[in-house]
Amino acid sequence: MLGPAELERLGAGEVLVFDGALGAERALAVAARLTASREGLAEAGVGRVRDPGVRGDLTRWLERDSAEPLFALFDGLLVELRERAWLGVREMEVQLALYPGRGESYVAHRDAFAGGGRRRATAVYYLNAAWKPGDGGELRVETPDGWREIEPVLDRLVVYLAEVVRHEVMPVHAPRWAVTAWFLGP
Image (cartoon, one colour):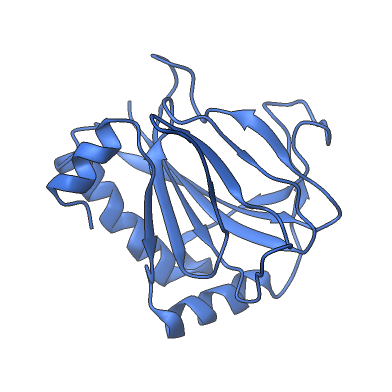
């Protein structure tokens, strides 16, 4: 997945987008399983602060048995980030998020403070088989070339450096599901 060109782009602060990350059949199965119920989802916050004006999604932490094919994808990415990108990642935390579709968003932020924290890289995997333009929820990312919007379509994987790439979720007008893995260093 992370060849020399992708590693160079990642290190330069670019965002990597991989379509067809699991393949259609497995992607549909994972999406069906993870989006079947809203059980366990709770209002998300930034740290311990809950403010829908900052972040409007519902989240829950995922365990490996909830979506094995997706965890296998993340496991492979962890190895590549550790051994090929030299990020020193050792483990990951994985979270399911739902934006219900009533205009929720998430303001521009980074997933880690520069030079601090354990998060080294972020991977976002989308579960939205029926997404269409107008549904909103695009991931808006700041790259060295300026801002770019990425549509949250089924089986798309987005990877970036946690402390480098500023990003936001644009207002959501239909349910938007995503799984985020943060790759952690010491």
